[in-house]
Image (cartoon, rainbow, N blue to C red; front, side, top):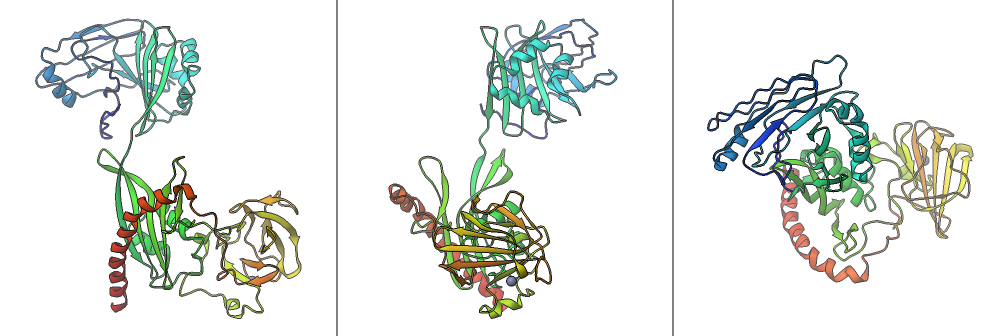
Length: 477
Ligand SMILES: [Zn+2]
């Protein structure tokens, strides 16, 4: 079903059910202890319905629609009035109205229950006059019904009830998903969730970095999520904490998701380029036949590496390009690693899959974790304020897994991560060492990947020219 949803209009009375027929509809009220007002105003129809229903009373009203051409007009001009129930301590308010769908045969009117703070399905079922047994049968009909356990204040539920029997229930879970419960022939319930598909539009942007990736990306209109995704794609090659220089630039081709013409959020990055200190990196998204997506260089190499370049969350690293201070970096021979100044408590991540070979205090290093990655590579993380509980010698860790937190234990002047990288036992500069690649695109997908990515590469070529011009103008100004 793909009915239009207008967020400015109330949910109630919207056309959720394709089974409703046009024509005439009987308005009927169950045993709800409340006053109900349903108002349908239409210039053409001059239809206005007014119900006053008290406890256990039933009122019916028939609206005859003479010309079905007027239905659309009616649907546009209908208004609804919702009166909260004047019952102390009640947790829902309800309303009834002439439904916008007019049926040629008699059927029961829709009621709407709004979810108030502290409401749950049991309360709401009781309020609209449905038994706990009915609720039990709905909840156990299908796993999709569990959405009804997660009601949020302000949400609305539409009920169609006939003589205390639930016929239909419609619950708009969010802008995209609507739950439908329908009584079946065999007196049980069919539960299903309709999911609307958002429209995907492809857009692109480009940016030049002056001080930080974040500022440049925000200037280019990127959301935080997209910035993180961008950093995630290139984070294997580029150290976003220490490698970024003024004049670095990026180009992004990405999806934006729309619903009824309104942008909902950013989608995936489908192609990207990052220029770091004169070196260009490109990444293309590819989804294989199993639906698994990953990023590859234009020649099909994985963008991922066996090691992440920055073992701390770079977004929390205070020192940025231009005002960074890492005096030890200049004397790599004496200093066996890289220091990442970061707030105390910043999570430290395992750079790659491996096995812990040391966990504990280690002289001037303070609280330290060492990881062996296969036979060739070793990493060391020092000065932790705290080692993550559960870390012990011999334990296996996954890449990206938190192993401890930034601190200043041992010989240290302030909170930072001291990070070492060893290849065959020899210290290497973690910023410069060539990291082994993760597996490239699988052979059986390679041709498809190259075919599909040709257009994206051409697009990046075009955008790169824009980018170069931008960077150039930047230098002139
Ligand atoms: Zn250090």
